[in-house]
Amino acid sequence: MRTSHTAVVERNSVFTSSFDTEPHECAWASEARWFVRILSIRQGAELRARVQISPDGMFWIDEGTELPVMREEGLYSIKLREFGGWLRLSADLDGSDPEVKVIIYLVLKE
Amino acid sequence: MIDADALRLALLRADPKLSKFNPLPRILCFDDFDNGVNGWCELIGNTDGNLDNMARYVRDFHPAQLSTCTYFDQGTHGPMSGTYALKAATRPVPDHMAVLCKRLTWQDLGPVQMEMYFSYKSEWNFEPVPEGGREWDGNYHPSEAQFGDIMIGNDIQIDDEGRRTHCALRYVNADAQGNLIRRWKYKTSLQVTRRTIRDMFPDDYLEHPLEDFQVQDPADWEDVPDGYQPLCYNEIPSKVNWHYLRWVFDIGRGRNVELQVNDKVMDLRDIPVPVHDSPYWGLARLLNLEINVRTRVPVRNFLYVDSLLISADW
Image (tube, rainbow over all chains, first blue to last red):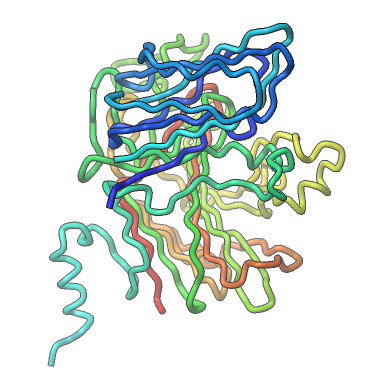
């Protein structure tokens, strides 16, 4: 039986500026998938989220994978492997007076 | 004639995984976090399915993680046994609480016991100590005063009439001003529920933040008799020492029985436990267990559990 875990790292969270998700330990998993569900996004706003990795949960670099640009409500996802022991998303929110409400899931599997 | 109790005890003591526990006659759960989170899920609030209707104070208790106890200086420290420990982690936000719970039901009235090997750490924080604060001296590290508190608790229905209560014991390591308290406390009022917060803050109950949802007022905590107990923080944020905790409560009485942490045993039989004044629907034989960690300062706090065992006398 494989092991898996779905973590809700942001739940109905409203952002009006760029943000990073909290560090999540995931050394046990060899594959991961981020889901970002846009519950609402203000007209003209644009959310770009890129995966970041870390050796220690404190110092971060871009992993190289980005989610599709998010401009409207819906579900967005990307898949990952070989990410080491920690994951987070670093999200840039652009636009005039932007606002977005999201649920963000991290699905881990071994 | 074989003495069944002696045989059982001999088997427990010969088992390298169980020998470090002292279970009651029936083991309900043995949670070795090398095998997943074992049902220790994030506590969340009630809604009608629309998350806009989930009150803010129960919206963000953060999911469980499986941790290798890895730090920037040490690399992987590792838990007491195996590779992974359960980790509850706060945000770096004052009074943020990470709450994990395990949801069971009881089969009989009587004692239930939760045992665990745990550790607690603040995240490394490279900000200078505020002026006048106690500096690192090669032994004491200021991160110790940046660790707030941990709590163990339950949510139980204690009879067929639907009476519901919450035993809760909190180890307050440091207060919001960074004073080391290092004392066990019990609560003197009920936790805030979706029902009660509507009465407390009728105008903005959905968004009203709470410093401490475990009680009606953040001051509603009293010292456990003989509850002063320095634990082994061990100097810096990346040295992880494991402590033994054994907590017994009695479902039929709706009371704590005792708390053991390493060599200290605290008799809790006479400590009052508040009971909800009206029944709750849908909680027949509820037996929820909870562990949580709260930071009082803008530094992440972590509660680690190497392994945990729940047993009952039924």
